[in-house]
Length: 114
Length: 111
Image 1 (cartoon, rainbow over the protein chains, first blue to last red):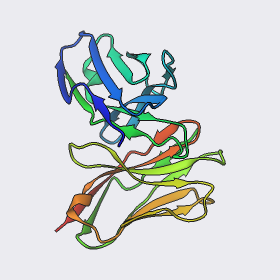
Image 2 (spheres, chains in turn green, purple):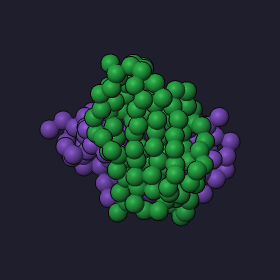
Image 3 (cartoon, rainbow over the protein chains, first blue to last red):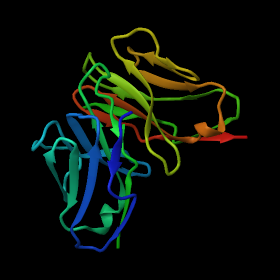
């Protein structure tokens, strides 16, 4: 089974802090994604990566950056956390294959910015 | 741009009954995949079912089946013999060049 893990289930930070959210997958997937999930808005793509050291902006990249130094790890960085970044953050991974790039999700990190 | 629309924010079903969740999408691509994901309360998002656009036959996974109408760009999920464990948020998703999710349908199962 594919396993995607995220470093924290719950996180509380203060406005202006730098926040790191870590995601690790163990299935050698090429593709990794970061989403934020908000009620009534579904999942919105923040950033994705198709390979090590590669990154692409999604629909809402403002205020975020990412790092992918190793294939299995994809980090989301909030350079200066703001209250409007309070949300659920979901990491996912996939490979381009017969499954049509099915995404497998981590458990999510619920971030509260005070 | 591709979009995915779930017009039912909330649905409910009696245990053991059947419920259908609606999803429509907009695309100009001919080759794509469609998915239904399930997110139980405070639990991980998991794949329920997947449909390849080039396949005429509707996908089925046990009690879950889809009604895929390519010309109408419709992709509904039918849950038969609903169980309490089916209560969750359900997301419809599309992938062609990129992944797109709908806003979700919250399903309540009434004992």
